[in-house]
Image (cartoon, rainbow, N blue to C red; front, side, top):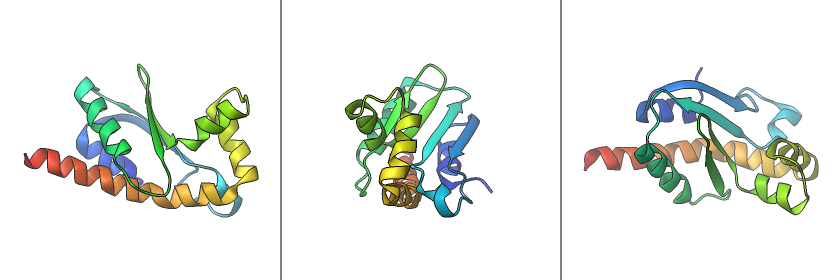
Length: 132
C-alpha cells in the first residue's frame, strides 16, 4: 500500500522514486523516529517546487515541516531535525533524527501521526490550484 503522502505527490506530478522512513507499518520504537520522506519527480519544474514549498509552509499543524530540494531528490521532514543538528553540531539530519528519537520519542510519534494531515493539506492546495 502506498502511503498517502506519495499518492498525493503522484497526483500532482509523476514520481520516479520514493521512500519513507520509518515505514508506514512501523510499530513500537520504530514509530519514535521522525519521518523522512524522500522522492524524485520524473519531470520536476520550478513551478512545482514553488507550489510544494508554499503548501508545506502554509500547513498549520503542531509540527513545522521543511522541504529541501536538491538537483535530484526532494526531502520532506520536520524542521526541528535540522534545527537540532545545527544546535548540537551534528553532521547531518539522519544523526539528528536518531538523536531526537532517543531524547524526545513523543516528537517522532507526533510528527509521524501528523504526516497524513500534511498530505491532505497538500492535496487541498492542489485541488484549489487546479480549480482556478
